[in-house]
Length: 213
Image 1 (cartoon, rainbow, N blue to C red):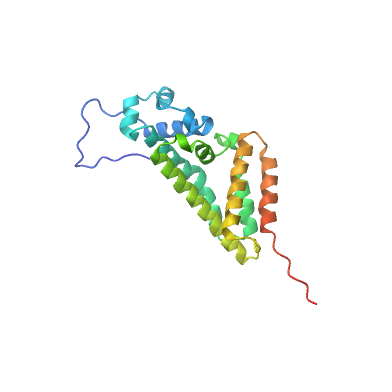
Image 2 (cartoon, rainbow, N blue to C red):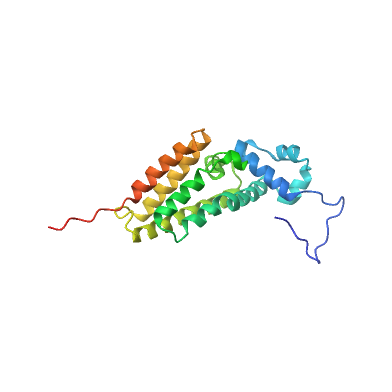
């Protein structure tokens, strides 16, 4: 992550820019993820990183710009891997196992908070700026589309046969959201995995073929 000044761009006057964009983004992301986006200010990020407030504003324009950039980083780190799993061409049973394994990773060993920033931002959406809200809606739409596409493929294997594709995708997405809430509440990943395994595989259960007379 970084910015590149073109050869024709006129440098800013005054003191040279001394701001670590990666540090700001990583710190903001972790603070939003841990405490909730509405509970963290630019002043908090400046105190945490030692960056100047004018410098942060020059880099991200405002609080909305910083939150949007942090959310973009979150999408790359925490959402795209799940999208890759859902769009894979593996059998549905393997995709279910891979998705559950990803959702219930040991966050402590990875050094990241429990829960999901998308869920937290959605709960606080009325307090988000327009750019952050637009990015949030875009990511959530992409996630739903991935679930929708996966359900359509699963039907080719005989799963979800009695269920509407749209409703099934919503059901699976909300099982994921519920899992993130449980994780945030301190419920063990083993228990969450068992719940997801039951919910996903029961929904996918293939309809038995009718007996011939």
